[in-house]
Amino acid sequence: MTINHKQTVEHFNLIFENSKNSKLELRSDKELDAAINMIATQFNISQIQSILLAVIFMFTMDDVDICTERIISFFGLKLPDFFTIKSDIEELIQIGLIKYKRENHSKNTYNSTFTINQKVLDAIFNNKDINSALIEPDMSFVQFCGWIKRVIRNRSVSDFSMFELSEKVNDIERRNPNILQIQQLKELKVNEEERMILYYLIESVTDNEPTVNLRLIIIELFGIDNYISISSQFMQNEQDLQLKGLVKVNANGYVNGYFDDATIGLTEKAYDLLLADSKVLYKNSPKTDHTIIRHESIIEKELFFNEKQGKEIDFFKESIKEENLDKLKSKLKQAGIQKSMIAIFEGVPGSGKTEVARQIAKSLQYDLFILDFTKMKSEYYSQSQKLVKEAFEEFRRVADANQNRMILLLNEADGLLHHRTNSETNHSTDETENQIQNILLEEFEKGDYLIILTTNLLNNIDKAFLRRFLFKISFDYPDKSTMKKIYRSKLGWLSDKQLDELSHIQLSGGEIDNVTVKVLMHEVFHNEKPSTYQLIDFCLQEKVEKRRLPKLGFN
Image (cartoon, rainbow, N blue to C red):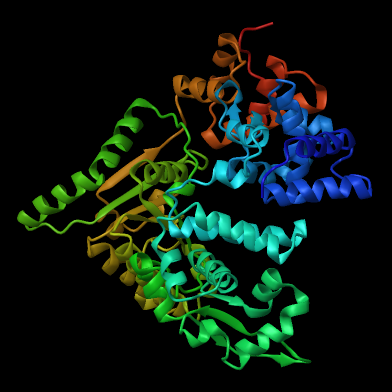
């Protein structure tokens, strides 16, 4: 769809004029509703995102970078309301419609300013399609399917026709002639509506949803009016995708003409054709309580460490770089040593253990497989051992498909690695825990994978495990110099004197984050920055045992 420059700007202006002090609850008006729906359709976004985009656009046209505080004030919202629109702002950033920059080197979305992406402005004022401006021509097939599914999902809020949906999908396909799978489907004479079904399923598979409710996908793509006729074709195995062997339907729950519980998924043939390079990674991923985080999705953050801690982290990071890791494993093998690349990050809560693991994965382009011990213990008396084994089997399967470019992250490791219980007590729970620990010891001994564990309670971990951890990195409270760097990165307006005063109060990085939030709240509520006394009070609130202000030598 080509954007009409004059009409689009008129829509933005109309939305802007009706948004001030609206609390994002705009009055019901035919012309205004049409404007919001038109923007949502043109940019493939939700109605709330359309309103946010219009406001940021109009401020951009006035050569003003709008900060989050100003957005909240413009809409007549309060600070807690920010969290209701935070995800919408972040999605506009992720899509590429708006750009943001951090105020005073801050690392959070709140303390940022926003402006319209120059590519979007160029597309609007040159009557170009927005997808042409934003879609990268070299995107992967999985990224492509993500774009298609987002367009399909947006149809439910933007109310554009099936013809318009087809036009959008065709345009995105044309923009990506190098994606082999698109050409293969066309050669198989899979029509555009059926291709959309496959794109939808592929995006769901890569999001750990191997099957999708049949009713849901038909209604989202073709509307409720077409549900019975299309679902009947699937239920009778007469749909062309089934005849070509690309999808399979599990028929359940036929009630009053509706197959409410029927599901649809890809066949083995479809996996081979469309996800050949990542078949093991995505095929039949079991539903677990564990999470896979792709390194591309991790937001890069600047972290600050004490000198000794920084050196230990850098040494570990260098050791597990792909080129260094291969050499290290070879030397260990020659020396007859089988040593797992396991690191344990231990220290006070809020000291950044998990975030360091995320940033290491980001910088080295390793994905993270997060195994949650606490959730496995929730089914302790029946399936805990089975769940532990299945979790490691799943990790190995995914890591192998990822050419071992994956880190297993185990948070709160002390939950299962604590001191062993004397078997003479003969309690079933004690026996189960010991058996689980045996499984973990076996897995750690295999030495094939990268593993990071975190704990706040190192002394609680059994020595049999500690001997197997090659890297042991302590995360203590930051020293004064490091605390000043952290404060400076989050609250750049602080004076040197204020930084010196605050650094006398020992806080973890997580506690400094809490102080930062309270400072931002104060700025929103009182329209001014807090005094030094108030800053210190915010810090002391993080230390519940300290109730009196220290004498720090200021007036």
